[in-house]
Length: 274
Ligand code: HEM
Image (tube, rainbow, N blue to C red; front, top):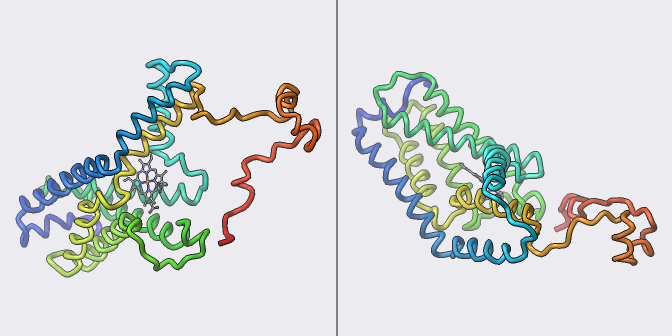
């Protein structure tokens, strides 16, 4: 079961060309949904206007070579290894969800577009991808997301914002059940297709497009730090520096000449007081 292409067996009931057409339609829905989302939220317009505004507070200009280095570092840290997550559980859960989804989608497309392939690796990767997505996703849904972990709300409370994670979970769960129960044209196959259609067709209403926007935002955030603009935020002062103490005399008055570095207050304690 793990080593045979479940879509090749399905071609006895559904012509391969229909399956290929479905993949193309889903691809177009993702592109269309992302463009509509961008137009509706005016996120691209905001992004460029904000970048222009931030440039005005820049203290130095960031050259082409430095921008390439920043882009490479965003690719390695924020995109490939989910480095924006400070909390290791959130980071690991996001890594499982993201890489599981990528492996699952890519292997699905390859198996459907090359039905005569006898590779046993592809179906194995397909199952591993779906399993990674399910593990990372259910972990996030039941234990990690803020409304449950910090705000103490029920795991079963649903909002429109949950469309993305729930359609991801439904797609991977029904795909696995469909395969484990022998594949073919069954009710589990119908549920698998229904949930994946909601996942790819619901981009406009879900958080799907964050995977395209977040890398651009991470890049912009780093450029703002590199050019010294810092979005007009104050610098990270060293409170023991006599120069800083002269500028802010309250510091030595209330905290002494050698104030300890207490770090970010937001990290002092886990948020669980709701
Ligand atoms: C296949 C690709 C990806 C999948 C399946 C995925 C999945 C998810 C999920 C399920 C969440 C939680 C959403 C929720 O609150 O309901 C999330 C949040 C997040 N993702 Fe991704 N992600 C992907 C790609 C990326 C990429 C490429 C980046 C960054 C470069 C990224 C950065 C983030 C960040 C910062 C959050 C937390 C903040 C927020 O919810 O807006 N993700 N992602």
